[in-house]
Image (tube, rainbow, N blue to C red):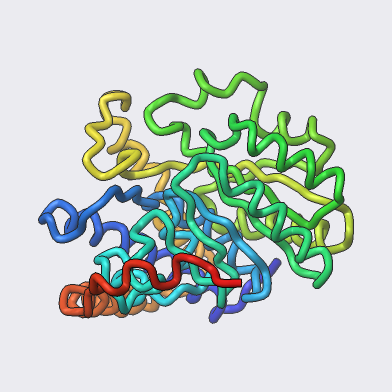
Length: 320
């Protein structure tokens, strides 16, 4: 799948926005500006963007506790997201979601989820609608969720009902603090998914082009009425499971190594400049524009309106 210059710049902008958004959150949290648990997505940008660049607002995604990257890649407003994490009533969910439950149904982002493995059944529900309207439902999860019973049941149901659901397993090698090699009993996540009777493949999660190509083929396969599919994306996370995680489970020099050798943004920049698809100066311009966006997002979030006591029960309960 050949991408135009405009598409390449957009993909890089999306990945860079996720990276700078997360790095700024890391700094702001350390300063005590943001309350609550936060799980950063930095390092996995090629996964979210490689998947979501194929999607329209009418396609659905279900996210995880590590969901900021998925939100941005699916088209959520970056400033409104930052306001949400800061607890403002001007945020995407009026300050009620915090980091782990952001949703924007208008762009097909059905919500992040603080419960590991809880997204898969929701993705199957959305897949029933997707089957009716010719769209696709994407379930983002990780190597931890791949071991959950909810995920197994959802995958089985998707096969039985022949739904256009794609289970995207971002394998960053750590389920919270436990290594994948210890926690995943199957030969691989890919082999386990195939055992449910669905098409299952693996791709390089630090290479945007590999993810993009593989997902394009899977989406076409699922929308053609062939049922669900799964993809395992081999990737890395650059921060701990949560902000404040001491990461004592990491090996000596591990973080330095993966930042140097397995950075999806470096990989993208190298590929497009060596192939003369884009100039380094063009990417530098994007870097500057994204930095300005993140600065504006933080500045506006710090002065944005906060919810009142009267707002506690609004948009919480449904009246029939």
